[in-house]
Length: 294
Image (tube, rainbow, N blue to C red; front, side, top):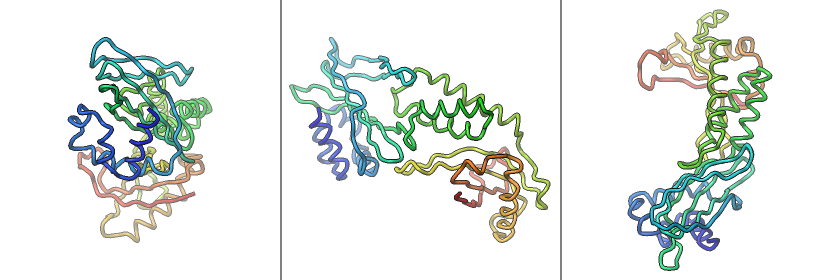
């Protein structure tokens, strides 16, 4: 299987969909005929420049084809269930971690035995860690911050944990319900302690803070974790950039008085000005962003 794994990943790293398809089964080709080229093209920047190591692998024999599989793999807090379908009677599952200094992806390759040759039946890929921490580690950070009532630090950590807890369809942590419940608690506590919209009456234009949330960048580096501070402004965001900038400068000076510790603990802050209230029903209202790096 090591040979097949290396060949498939090498084909992806070279953006070679023809070579990639040499190692896939007819079943995979039928299902992915229209998207295999896009799979290779999309995954190429993720594969390149990352070290590879085995996360888990196993061989399995079934009495029937298309057998369903749902099995727990023990690891304490990191215990997870793998649910999938094995198309042939003899199958091999190989799960690899592709890592660099800021995080890792997990790739799941399931091969079937076709007349003594291993052919790829299933290919899954998803983020496993961000900034060197897995879903479980971010969950522990969130729980610690929550107990200390550092709610926005807790929100950051649980947002990332939630994002990572299901890297691909069929991979589920045993304690996923605990992650989801903590996420709900943190959001509820923030809503209670910091009700929104919040009118910044100490600023002449009276902007309203309407939403604060975290965003994880979709780039392959996985390093763009930002906090989004969305506010409604009475200043026209299309025609009055100078006034918008002046107002935002005032917001940046006052924001830490309203939400202590919010700015200090975040490296990338995005202030997002809008004219329409999020609950107005307007789809994709125009916005103007100010990006601050600490």
